[in-house]
Length: 332
Image 1: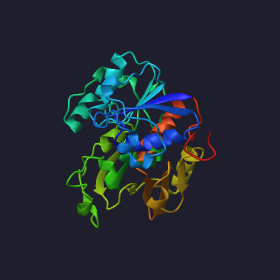
Image 2: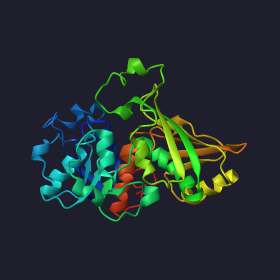
Image 3: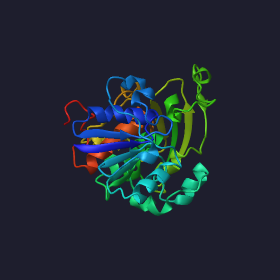
Image 4: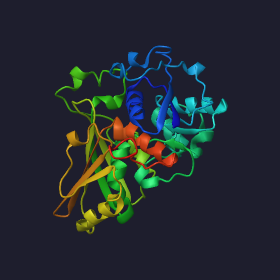
């Protein structure tokens, strides 16, 4: 069994990770840390886990990583790197999957400009591999920067363009549910403000755009309009490309890259619907070609494929298990 711990596990991503690990045939959850809920049963923060888990939160200062094989770090952006640095300074030698943005940007100045913080551990950034399983695995090491939720859908949807087009402008619109903003309430995520409403934010300057741009060649230019939607979980987005050479070949591009990946579902000649992706570990991608224009659509569960289940994929990869283990009923 893989002995697993979650640092800062009282938030939404921590809850999803706990539920997935409990169902994983080769993982054993040994510790979940939290300052706020230290020494309280895990179900105090996650009531749905009452009766499923006989475990109390460990105070971060009391956490002992000596017998842990893999640690998920579910801290906030700007605090993930500090948590990683602390456990490494304490002698930890196992694998790490960080859920924050702290190790996703190889250019530290970009990270610091976007998040308005000084990076806590710049010397560790190059030790982390960007954890997009279908595109970049197998990885060169045992430290993984788990991608962001918008970034997951956008990068998977745009990758065939990166590989097959010399030039294109891609206009992205993506709508996310309230859980993408985290467990702490904010005026813009307060549900009475979101219910029945659609609101654009961070237009052309969302942090997940430069996150994926570092992997897309310069001939492909990207613009993004992120939108808050009136639901709790899930992201639905479109990429609009016009005046593209050989648009009829797009089906072959997607199938050649993704047909052998079980956790990507292709929707030829149509755009995926959000409700079929929510609650699942899949990224659904579809496309429509009309009169020289292409629209590529994607749908993911931001808490699962955009965070926790993708982290489980990465755990499986670095632990030499089938990538879908614990995520699909037939995968053991």
